[in-house]
Structure formats: C-alpha cells, structure tokens
Amino acid sequence: MINRIFKTINNKRSKYHNFFFFLRYIFVIFFISTFLYLSLPKFLNHQNQLGSIKDYLAYNYKLELKSLSSLEFNIFPQPNLSLKNVEFKIKDLPLSVNSKNLRIFLSYKDIYNFDNLKTKKIELNSSESSLDISKIADLLNYFKTLEHKLIVKNLDLNLKKKTKSIIEIKNISFSSNKNEKIKLKGLLFNERFIVLFYKDSKKLKFEIPNAGVNVNIDLNQSKNKKFYSGTSNISILRNYLKLNFSFNSNQIIINKSNVRNQDLSISLNSLIKFYPFFESKSNIHINKFNKELISKIKLKNIFSNNKYILERLNSNSKITYDNKLSRNSLIKNISAELKLAHGRLMYTNNINFLGGSFNCKGSSLLTEEYPRMNFDCKLNINDKKKLFKKISVPNKFTNNKIDLVLLGSLNLFNKKINFEKIQVNNQKSIKQEDKIYFKEIFERILFDENFFSIFKTIKIKEFILEII
Image (cartoon, rainbow, N blue to C red; front, side, top):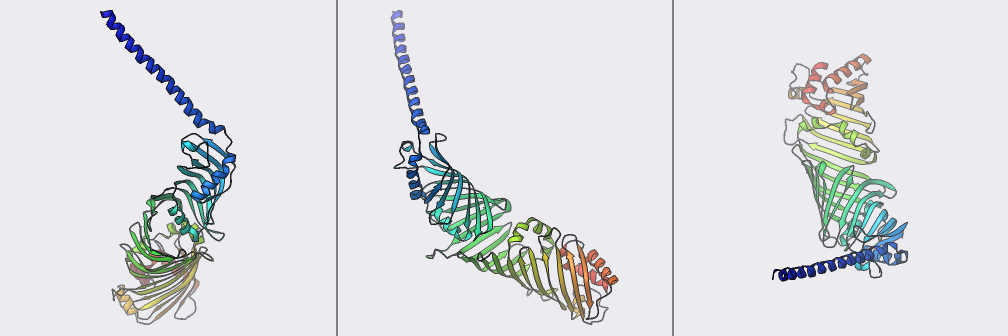
C-alpha cells in the first residue's frame, strides 16, 4: 500500500518536472528569437532607407536633413537609429544645427520597415547652432507647435544680430511633447538657468536660481506675428521689476515700468535696439532712495566681473531725481546722462544742493585693470550760510559766493586723485604745492573708503573745515 502511494507521488512529480523542463526550452527559444529579431537590423544596410527617414523628420519635426557621416542601428537602451555628425535645418527658420548624434527611437514593429515610420521620440546630443536674436519668438513658437517628442541635450546656441555675436547660451537641454510643458535648462554667463512654458499658454517663466533671478512673462494676444507685447514681473535678490513691454525683430520698448527694493524706487522708459547694432536708451526717474545705499555699491566688483558685458554694451541713460519730500534736505535735485560704448563711459551731471550747485563732465575706460575717471567740474556756492548751517559748519565766515573749477582724474580702485587745475573765483590756477595739499586732504578725508564715500555729508563737512 505504501509503495503504491510513493509510486503515485513520484509519477506526479515526474509530470511536473517534465512540464517545467519543456518550458525551459520555450524560454530559450523565445529569448533567442527575440535577440535575433532585435539584432539582425544591426547588420543590415540602412542607407537605402535614408529617404524615408528624411521624409519622416521633415513631415513630423520640420527638420530638413542636409548631411550625415554615418547611419547605424542600436539595440540599447531601446531600438534606435543613430545618425552621426548630422547637419540639418528647421523649416521656415534661418536655423542650421550641427549635431554629433541624432537618435531616432523606433517602435519594435518598425525596425525592419521605415516606410510607415512611427517613432516614440528623437534625441539630439552635443549640438551647435546660431540664430538671429530677432527670431527667438519664432523658435519658441516652433517648440510650442511641435506635436512629437523632441529631446535636446547639450546644445550651444549663439544668438547674433546679422554677423555680430550678442550672447551665447551653453549646455541647453530640454524635452518637448504634445500637450506638455517645456522645461529648458542651460548656462547663461556661466550661471545655470531654467525656462518653463506651456504650449497652450502665453505665459513663460525664467529662473537663474543661484543668482536669485525669477522672471514671469505674460504675452498679449496678437494677430501680428512680427509684433509682440505683454507684461513681466521680475525678482532679482529682493529687487522687484514690473515691466510693460512691446517688441519686434529690431527692438524692445519698455514703458511706464518701475523697479523697487527696500532702498530704492525708480520709474523708467527704455528703448533697446538690436539693429543695426545693439544699443539701449533709457529715461530713469528716481522716486526715492536710501542715502546709505550708495555706500554699499562696490565698483570694483561690478567692473571686474562684468568686463565682457561692458565691452559689448552700448547705452545712453538719463537719470533724474527730485527731492520733493524733504524741503530741508541737502540735495534738491540731480540730473545725469551716462553714455557707454565699447567699455568707455562719458558722463555729465548737475547736482543742485542747498546753497549752490555742482556740475561735472568727463569720461572713463571701465574695462581697464585700474580705470581712471577724468573730470571737469564746477562748484558754485551762492549761499554759504544755508550750506554751512545744513552740514553744521560754524557760521563764522563771510557769505561771499564761491566759484571753484576742478580739472583732473581719479583712480576708482586705488583711491588716488590727481588735480591738473584748481581755480577759485575765476582767478589763476593755484600753485603746485597747493594742488598737492588739496590732493592729500582729498584722499585722506573724502576718498579714504571708496568712490561714493566722497558724497557723505560728514566727510564734506570735515573737508570744508580743513581747507577754509
């Protein structure tokens, strides 16, 4: 009886063993068949399929393939065609791209027949391109209308105006797909940035995280594809900008916009042109500012770290300030004009203060290692009594007018000044030993910290007491 039971059990085990043994062969056959199915295209010549590939890229991605060095099939990470050293153009855009590798990812049913190609996505790796800056809106519109998935990795884009380079954006990476947001990353001035926008929206977001830059743009609806307008809210390290703008292929116009932070509030209108060359014109009105703000400005950091920008920036800025809030303030109003071209600054300013005025003009090459500021200034004190009372100088002097002419230069970083001419009340220039005396007093009292410390009231008072 027991022998029969063991025999029955062994027979059942034998049937199970035989079944799993048979399945093992099925798995081996399936694996070999799948491997052969995926591997055989690796050994086929795909050059005769190049026409179908070109047609697919042109119809679905608007990419016109110009040339390539090789075409091969890869199995991993999923079946794909790899086109090496590719040159192509985006249809209807003056944008040619050179890419080291363009990969077309295939569905499994299409790896033998490309006549009715239906890819999952295409991917561009290590690419270079240049584009006229006026066509940026057209490029963004291309991505927004793209219905098939496009992945871009490590694209270097040079934005130009005609043949002149304006700005370079490096290591651009993004993914675009139908009904999906587009997230673009890259390096701008060696800082990582992020651009985010949706295909069905006029809104765009731009960030430079390490620099604390956050930009939100809302475009208006427009039937004119060559003209755009909108509003933008910008945050840069607790500095807030609200801009109303309009632009076309040649220029950007900024109207009735403002900038504010805890120390400053300004209103501005600006015109930025791209053609025939890059330049900007701005009218800036200062509504209020904290007088302690100027002591925080570090000219050396600004000039040393931004020489590349200063060499390429052409600008003309008019700045005004009216101190209407405080009648007894030392400064009544300020007007200045700054012209910057190829790193050279030309300036004029007029400061009206309690009891007189101070006018200056001059120039400086800001891209030098140790830039010097040349100045030609006139100081007119019409009412010494008002001025001296305001800065707490003892009222023991006659109230005669003072006309002072100062001509010379000062080193912005080394805190040194050189007087070529000092003339008082239209008389002859003072003697050389007096110039040396003025130089020593000026550097010791006014210019002992930085350029903007010259305008501190306490220093002006000490300087006046020293020389009169």
